[in-house]
Image (tube, rainbow, N blue to C red; front, top):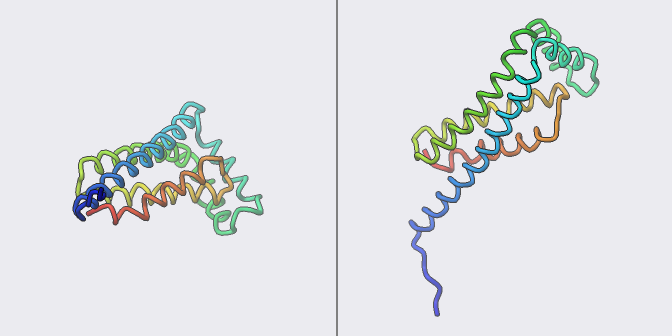
Length: 159
């Protein structure tokens, strides 16, 4: 008995469907993790005092690069109130953005790849700033890896 032969278009369709499912799983995981991060900060009353702790800690930490110490001293610290509000809001926005990536991918939207690049790129950038300030928790490396995978494969998934 000979195995069934799949046509190239059928194989491509299966691969595309598989990529959409994988994008959905990764996007949902990232969305939940970002929303969770934001909710923890909102629930704990995250604000200017927390940003001052990060900025002051970075200024005295030899593991923090000099350029980031300067950023913390001259931008982050003096604007702690703004960043104390903006960071949980940014995290919530990234979580919602990853959910939107899933919806766009399922709807086969022409904006799916663009939205993926925007949200995944924002996620990588945000996580790297956390890493630069030596604010590393167990899920951040996983989130960077998953975000980078979505970012790297965005153009191969279509539009």
